[in-house]
Length: 173
View 1 (spheres, helix red, strand yellow):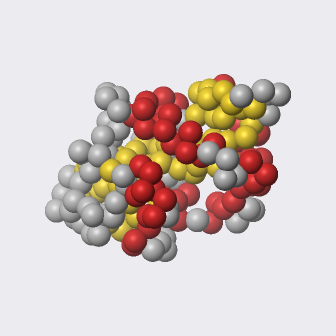
View 2: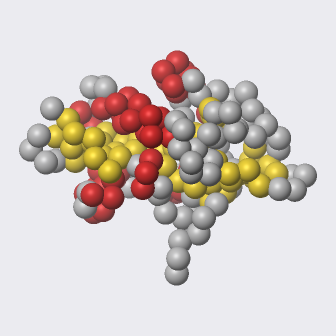
View 3: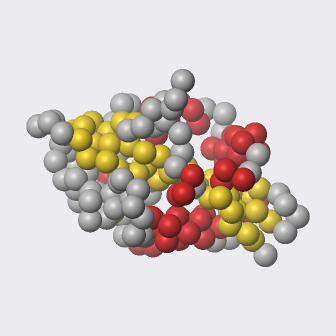
């Protein structure tokens, strides 16, 4: 049996260890880390998958970001990811379970941007199972390299115009 718990109830070092195992030591150099630099995950949309023995086997984190529109203005969004699963437990539906739980929490949420989810990921997977598409992301820029076909979004609040995606809420000093 796998329990899905709020991520904030899990040891932060265990989360970091899981992320290192799932993505490797160079994970912090990825563009997604630059997008969310200086902000903290959204507790209401971030979850942990914990096995019966109490071990952490998966996580999903979500982050407050915004599209700073080229014509002015800002559109709040939520960046989904990373979705991480212990390597020896991958392909067992844990990541999908975490995504479904997050989507359930986001649906109808009053959090700014909860109706505008975005991520950088495999369009075949995230499109097929979770309705993420690149339809409205063509004019978006990120603070680092990315494949445009992998910049995906879903939700009624997803902006369609050009602009730069970056962190929305800064951590308190």
